[in-house]
Image 1 (cartoon, one colour):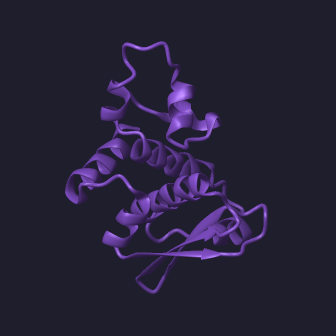
Image 2: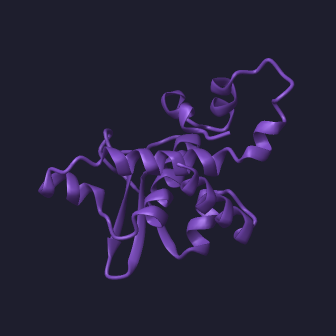
Image 3: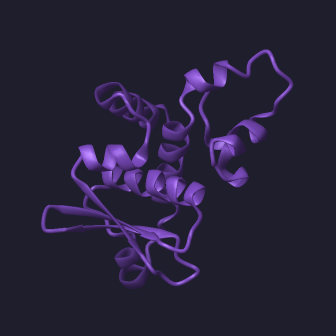
Length: 144
């Protein structure tokens, strides 16, 4: 999914940041922390040309950062798609767009430049991604 990496790199270059909260602000995507059900970490919503990222206010800061990056991925890759709506009304599988949003988040939070620091060390990719707040289950999505 090198096309996702290209989109992420363009964002980072244009706004000189890989902070998902800053990028959301630059892209006029409203980030709202809300007391959501324990099973919901966050979601993206598009409504009448407005974009929103809702993040569960009960999460720790590292998880909030990843969730924001993931949902920002939806805002950039799937602008008009409301995944909660898809799940509840269309019954279409949303796994493809979730993988794409996870890939976006991994590429955003762990740019290649950061990985170069670890090339001559014995640190594994799982250890590096954990340092950057990326869940172990999706560290394989990093394209390097």
